[in-house]
Amino acid sequence: MAALRVTAQKLLQTNSAFSPLLAVPALSRACHHEPNFEYINVSKVGEKQNVGMIELNRPKALNALCDGLMAEVQTALKQFEADTDVGCIVLTGAGQKAFAAGADIKEMSGRQFQEVFGGNFLAHWSHLADTTKPVIAAVNGYALGGGCEIAMMCDIIYAGEKARFGQPEIALGTIPGAGGTQRLIRAVGKSLAMEMCLTGNPITAQEAQQAGLVSKVFPADQLVPEAVKTAEKIASHSKLVVAMAKEAVNASQEMTLREGLRFEKRIFHASFATNDRREGMAAFVEKRKADFTDS
Ligand SMILES: CC(C)=CC(=O)SCCNC(=O)CCNC(=O)[C@H](O)C(C)(C)COP(=O)(O)OP(=O)(O)OC[C@H]1O[C@@H](n2cnc3c(N)ncnc32)[C@H](O)[C@@H]1OP(=O)(O)O
Image (tube, rainbow, N blue to C red; front, side, top):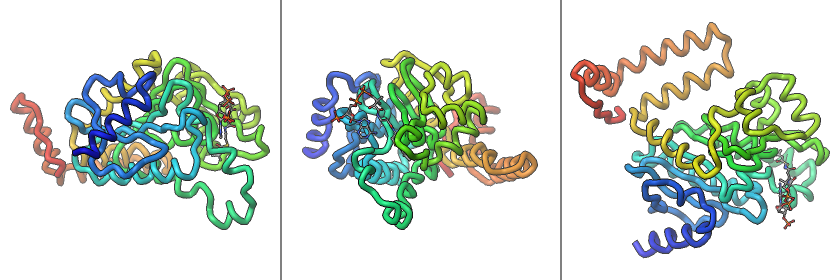
């Protein structure tokens, strides 16, 4: 309990001037099992405390994604995956200047080919894309390089009005390595993806929304509360069936239309094996609210 109080105090002190968490209407609570995170803030938020919140917290380095930070994100995601109360996760950056300005260039600059190739550098980042619970990226400010890539690993991207999305690796003499070319082309099409990767120029939140990278744009101070509101809505449904829906949507990126349609239908059939499908339909017929048991 004392540790919980200290963590909550730390959360408030660290970000009291600008933390988007403070704008979340429902009480946010630091996680019970929280190890000593150095680079991120982790809490459960929402009225029912069923939304996992991960806030990248290296504001002096514009939340650059050093190895330690990415390892902590992986740990927090594993915790939320295992937490049966959590139905959705929100990933955001501390402050409004940056979601994340990319991989930590200072850390990366001395690395050699044999180290990055031999050690399969960046492989562990994909944990974010493999999460079975839905993840919403709430992007204020810069989402550049790896920052844009981790946003694209999430299932939904909401942006603040001043967000900037870009793949500026070309100016560093390298190229995106955590899905920047592949996910971008699927999200915005070849011409814009190519332009972004070859010029390094970022696009605005509004351009990203028009092109399809972002689903909604909000005033900066409303971004996280809106993301939490959506996360709460998702968390109010059956976690089992939410995972099925997420898998079906994601499958389309890797399948032909014919394969995707078959896969979707089979998952739809599978939902009939769940108690929650029975409960959801019974609740509609009986004109009452469904009481899902995630079974
Ligand atoms: C994942 C893969 C495969 C690759 C990558 O992600 S490579 C990185 C791609 N990202 C970038 O190239 C962006 C680098 N940052 C910038 O261009 C600028 O910082 C900016 C345009 C985002 C903001 O410029 P501003 O003038 O407002 O702020 P700065 O003084 O430049 O930055 C403040 C502070 O943060 C440090 N910083 C920023 N980005 C990074 C980064 N990616 N890695 C490490 N450190 C970063 C910056 O050095 C400065 O700190 P110091 O004053 O202590 O040097």
